[in-house]
Each structure stands twice: as C-alpha cells, then as structure tokens.
Image 1: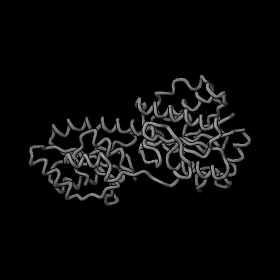
Image 2: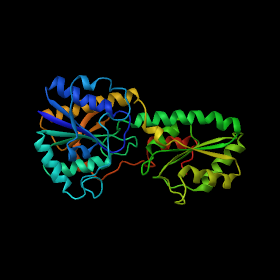
Image 3: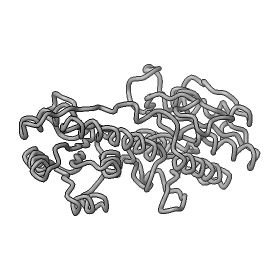
Length: 336
C-alpha cells in the first residue's frame, strides 16, 4: 500500500511523534510506502510531497512543531490558494494520480470536519486528533494538551513568588477560545484562586469578593487564571479586562500576563509522546485492515477509533459537573 500523511491547522507538541508513529509502523511492520504531504491540504493541491524513508524519520520523537509544515487551507471554503478551481475535485484527482491508497490527516476540529467531507466523497481517510485545547469530541485526551498544561502550570508556579513578594493579584491568560480545559487543568495544578473558563458564566463582584475575603484571612495575594475566550467588553484581551476590573472592584494592585504561543511550542511531554506514538500506530493498523473514514480516539486507557461523521462539527467542553470543578469549589476556589 502507498499512504500519504499531512498535518493541518495550528502546530502543537507531539505532531512529529505522531508522524513517526504512523510512518515507522507503516514502513517497518506493514511494508507500506509513505508519502509526506507538506503544508496541510495545500500540499495536496500543489502536489508538494516527499517520499519518507526510515532515515527521514529519525530524531522526531522529542521535536516540537511539525516537520511537514502546516497551513490553515480549508479546501471546502473560499479563500486560501487556487480560488478559481474546484479544490475538492483537484485534491481527489491528485490523490489518484499520486497513487495514494489512503491519506492520514493529523489536525484539530477544522481538520476533522474537512476529513469527514472527503470521506463522504469516497476518499480513503484516517484522522488523528491534535489540539492543545483538548476540545475534540470523541476522545478523552488529545496529544498536545498535556504539554500545554505543563507549560501553563510552570508559568503559574513562577507567578506565585512574584505575587507573594509584591502582595499583588496576578492574572494569567492561557489559550482556549471556546473550551477552558487548559485554564481548568493548569489553574487547578498551579494552585489558582480564581479560574475563569468560557463555559461557566462569571460575576466580577463574586471574583472581587473572593480576592477581598482572601485578604481578610491574611492572604494578601491571589492568582487568577483565565481562558482567552471568556466574555469581556469585546475591546480588550481577557487578562487585561479582568485585571482592570479586579483593581476597580478591590483596589488591589493587579498585573496581567498573557502566555500566548509559548503554550504551543517546544518538546512534547513524555505522556504526549506516548499517546501520539500509540495513536499513530493504531491509525496504520486501521489502514492495513481497510477501515477508513475513522478518527483515532483515547477512551480510558484504550486507543480506539470512531466514525468521522460522529466527530465533525462537535466540541468537547468543560461543564460544571466535571470532577476538577466540583473539587475546586469544595476547596474554596472561585469559578466566577
């Protein structure tokens, strides 16, 4: 068999470990031929590809980013490159001309949606979920999440000493437009006093009261962890808005830190490397068994797969019944 692999959407730690997991299993165990497709779906439009060998896969396990490159090209939407052609038809034609028996897509929610549409057109596709936000429906964890949480937690740990020294409130903004998983997990792991996520409505009065109550108990500093997607006045970043509101409510000096793209970069954690490797191997197994139109998923400790059609267009969001939210509230942490 001859298979292609691409990585689409934002980069995140663990993509290279996944490429390695897919391709080494394909070459060594199944004797498949593997073609690396550059720059996501854009590479399928332009036939920007390379043949992979055992040697070209060396040194990938701990490497951040994606050695194939990525793009936000969405073949089923207007924009991007080649706006004057029927992009899905061209991709189908190019896949046929390159003799690919299956395309492996590594990506987030947008990629899963695109992959599902190509599966409906009859393209043999297997997809692997990738996101630091952990918001892909159908899998307990996506690789990249643990790495992002580790980076965010480390940053929160470092802010404690500054907040304590200056008796300030420190607001740290982490990624998460619609889903607050990074804020929840890093906020809890880093000992945040207030954790604000897009899914749970908050009241600034309640946040202010929590901080003043801590002051009354002899705790002159507080750590506030916010997801970038929480509701604000629409003009400021989440951290800036919350910091200003806290100063207004409490009169306590407040500073903000935006973690930004630092969360996406660098080496994946051991956990992410292992999840990525297992998911990559399982994807190749599906291809060998002729099972297409499926997304790899982690359920408990098991790597399984689910139909792509079930995943497309859905988001996995934080809810108030989540163990960490319930336990946090019991311990006096404010969720707004």
